[in-house]
Image (cartoon, rainbow, N blue to C red):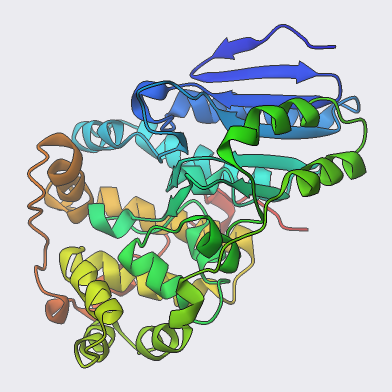
Length: 368
């Protein structure tokens, strides 16, 4: 029996028997997350976690004719830009609460299914990577493209990218490379592929399950054979280039490789924020040995510095969003402008926590 949908803050929350259904509903923004949506998702998931009648959760997004399919294209970048320039405290609240939501999903006590149809980037990865079942389609495009806007792969990106095969995580984090279904599964960032046309039927079947085991069986029954992934064919090249000790060395290694794949990767790196490339590489290397809660605390520290340094009004995060989203000139003025000019001391400053451990905004996160 279905309950009446509850709609608020761009999120539809419904109960269908023992299954909670969450539908992101901001089609005009490709379902980008804002603070209201994060709070709605968190409150609903906590309530369902405590409700013994809820057996599992399905996350999806509204599909609207004429718009690209998307689960979630990330965070609300226009809000980031506006709030950073205005010193709005809701910017800090957004990241603290978003990372708390991501951790909740990773540690959710009930089966969680994320239907990752279409664009799934940034914050969309954050709310789907912790799912028990990460379902992709032939339309899926997964990426962590934050270095393109002067940021770094947050929402747990350091944690889940660093656990990709070999040095694939460094490649994905630094370049923002977009993954289709087969490569997403090969990288460990998705579990099963389903035809996009079959998603309505899959959703209906999931809403009728009566046990966690039956939920697993429904997902498995809907899965398609997966095509040959392309990225694993480059594994030796990825490991050789992206294991280099710093970004300048990675670029030099790619430069010496005449292969088209290497040159495309180099071209992508040359367009990104040099400073945030260095920060991102350090983030990935540290994250590889961290539990999730500690890694999210580290990300919260880095994000604080992205928007709160003395020169934040002219920093790479604000400048990158300006160039990509606000003015759309796609001509960011990075500082420094060259990878070779990034100073180790400036990179290290991003990893200094501005809070004592007991007063950290994410101090309450635990992985046990």
